Amino acid sequence: MKGKLKYRHNVMNINSIDTFLNIKGGCCHGCRDVYFIRALGSGRDIAQYILSVDKRMGSRMQSGELFYVRMGELPALTRQEDVLFYQEHAKGLRTEQELYVKNQEKSAEFGSALGKACFEAVEKYRLIRKNMTDSIEQNFVVKLLYWTDCVLGRALSDWNERKCFKILADNVCREQEYLFYYMLTLIGCDVLFLQRRKDIETVAAVRNLSGEFVLGEFNEIPIPEYKPYKKEEALHKPEHRAPERMKTAGSPAVQGMAAQSRPVQRIVEESPAVQNRTVQRVIEKRTVPQSPSSVEKSFEELALLAASIVMIEVHDQRGKAVSTGSGIMIGKDGYILTNYHVAGKGYFFTVRIEDDDRIYRTDELIKYNAVLDLAVIRINRSLSPLPVYNGKKKLVRGQKVVAIGSPLGLFNSVSDGIISGFREIETVDMIQFTAPISHGSSGGAVLNMQGEVIGISTAGIDKGQNLNLAVDYKSINMFIRGFTG
Image 1 (spheres, rainbow, N blue to C red):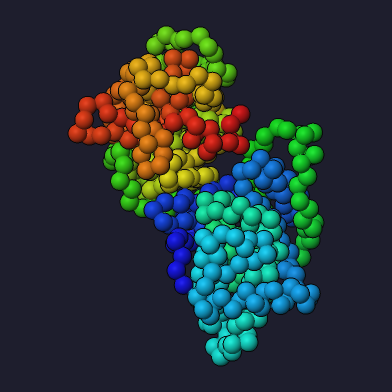
Image 2: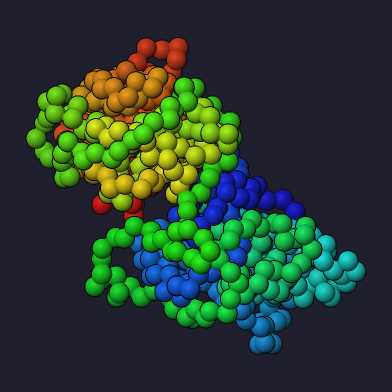
């Protein structure tokens, strides 16, 4: 059975619930990244933490950013009319036709993806049930279709291959349920099991379909039943909160994630390793404006905004610094925007900030999108974010801009130029500009004369002079929603 997309599982290491919830798998060149993870054990404050997750993710779902649900035990199929409906649709698996459910009977694209996913789940079930009969297979497929309706519900009505689905499943012990959630990852869902009591017991080939990390000891601490977030609650408490961190028994505060090293062909270049030194955090000497202004700034004033641009050094598993890039402060709680081709190849990162002798080490890659070539990392420090342009006035060719980054490791170099054009590169809107950039400038800021970020330096054409590209503010605003402030 053919499907348009291929799915890659767990291309980056996930070692916290927050990281799982915030990371968004890329979808590029016919391949979608999904995450299938088991969180083993829990801490004593698990109930309070999960309630905060439900509220935070529910708010994001109300804004249209994603779909979120937390599931307990999956329901049994009891109504005869439902049994007959799903039995009839399950026949499509044997004839290699599209499969549909009640909440999605129109999209051939979805039907093809679901058919292929069901087929894969059945093949994995054969590893457990060596002598599976036709009736056992049909009953399993019927359950898969019914559970798909139960878990995803009306969210299927506008299903598409790029939509973000986040599912938490509590204490999954049955192999059929485990494989059902595996099937959901093959139609674009990210699934995390809260294995608080014990881990799944099955053959290694099936269990190893998912990654794992340890939250604490196995226990019987109850957590409240999931209640969908109500829109009315958002009207009373509209503030945005940074992802909360849970402390667990036997483990430190939830850590970020270590990104696996992969080759990326963009403008990132090797640099010397970071020297070991004794450092102290110092108070920032420069103040960065927190709100955009309509007043045009001088080049000297714009250069002061370099205090909100960082240099990122990318390290491999051995700790060797393999490349450098730049980043833009976008959130007070440590959030830094950079390019995916900068952060995606790192095992961990060290971050340097102007007027601060300290080097900040982090392995927290919070979110990425390979198509937009954007990523967010986080350091443990309060930051002074730059405002991102809101599009109140259309950008035009000839408009003056300033670029700030760390080309060739030269920390926070400032250059000026103009917008020379607008391009669409592989479906992504780009700003072409003339302000000089070099290797290492990737992830730096392109500013208008009011000091607002209109783009993030992404690529340069080596054979041309000052032919540089930046992902534009519209993509940036969409990507960093929820991190600013």
